[in-house]
Image 1: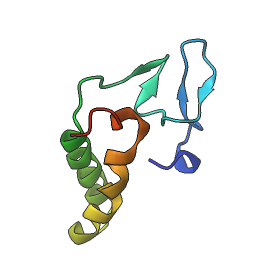
Image 2 (image 1 turned 30 degrees about the vertical axis):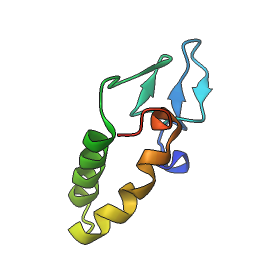
Image 3 (image 1 turned 90 degrees about the vertical axis):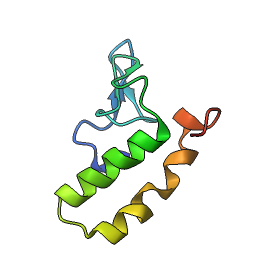
Image 4 (image 1 turned 135 degrees about the vertical axis):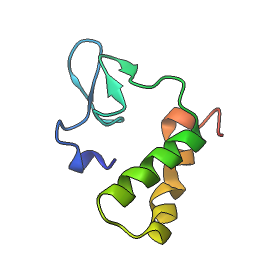
Length: 78
């Protein structure tokens, strides 16, 4: 999720401050909300959400291209 579209302005760090690297759906109180989710699972989740809001299925791949480049998965891609 682009942080500028995050209704909370980003996730939260352990001290309650806003985290500007991760969205509020993924990061809360200094921890990932789904710590064991894989890149593939995250791509599937994003594709499902995008379809739910009305985007055509063929566009979902475009929205998930950058997931593997996110800081969370840089060291453990896929």
